[in-house]
Amino acid sequence: MTTLNMKLSGSMTALATPFRDGAFDEKAFEAHVDDQVKNGTSVLIPMGTTGEPITMSAAERRRAIEVCIKVNARRAKVFAGAGSNSTSDTIENVKLARELGADGVLIVTPYYNKPTQAGLVEHYRLVARAHPGFPIMAYNVPGRTGVDLLPETAKRLCDIAEVVALKEATGNVLRTLDVFEQVGDRLTLLSGDDFVVAPFIFSGGRGVVSVSSNVVPRKMADLVAAALGGQVEKARALQLELAPLHRLLFVESNPIPVKMALHLMGRFANEVRAPLLPMTEGNTAKLKDEMKRLGLI
Image (cartoon, rainbow, N blue to C red):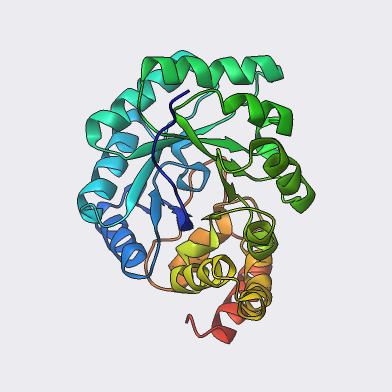
C-alpha cells in the first residue's frame, strides 16, 4: 500500500477564534496567526475544537480558514478542522479545505451518534476515498465525543493511505504506548493534551496539538524540541514550569480559559459564544496570577 509522504512534528496550535461584538474579529485573528508562526508553531489548526466552529456559521468558518492560510503564507502547514458527526458533511468540509489551499485536515471521530469501531474506520475510509491523496489527521477525544478510537482501530486506519497522523487526547500515556505498539511509525502520533507532552513524546509521539500554545507558543515549541531532541531534563523542566498554566487553561471548558488568557494579554475581546460563558471571576483571578508569574502580563 502506498502511503503519503508527510511527516508532521513539533508544536501545533488548535487556534482560538476571536470574536468582537458577536462577529469574527479578522484583524485579531490575523495578528494571532502571525504571532504563532513567528514563535515556532509548526502546524496551524483553524476550526479545531478550540476554535468554536460548532457555533460559527459556514461563512465564518470558511473565512477563518481563508485568513489563516493567507496570513501564514506557506510558512507553517495548515490543517483545517473538518470533522462532523455526518460523514457526508465531513466530505464536503474537506472539499472546502482543499479548495482554500489547506495542507491537510483534522477530522475528529464522529460525536453524539456513537459509531462502532468498524463505523469509525468506515468514516475515515469514505472521506479518504472522496479525497484521494489529501492528508488526514484523525482525532480521538472520547471526553467530548462519547466514543473512543481504540488502539486496534488505529491499526486499521493504517490501511488508509490518507490518514497520516493521529491526535490522541485521552491524556493516558499508557494509551500512547498501546497505540504505538499497534501502528509503529506508520502514523505520526500527536498528543492532544498539554499536560503530558514530554512523556507522550518519550513514548513514541512526535509533537502536540496544543491549546496552551495559543498563549505560550515559544515555550511549547521549545518543550517539544527538547523532548524530540532527547533533552530530558530541559523537557521535564519546561513541562513542570507550564503545568500550573495548563491546569488553569482547562479549569473550565475549553476555550473559555484560553480566550480569557488572550484577553488579559490584550489580544482578544473576552467573547465566547453561547452556550459557553466567560470565565468566572475566581478562576480569572487565579489565571491572572499565574500569567503574571510567567511574565505574560
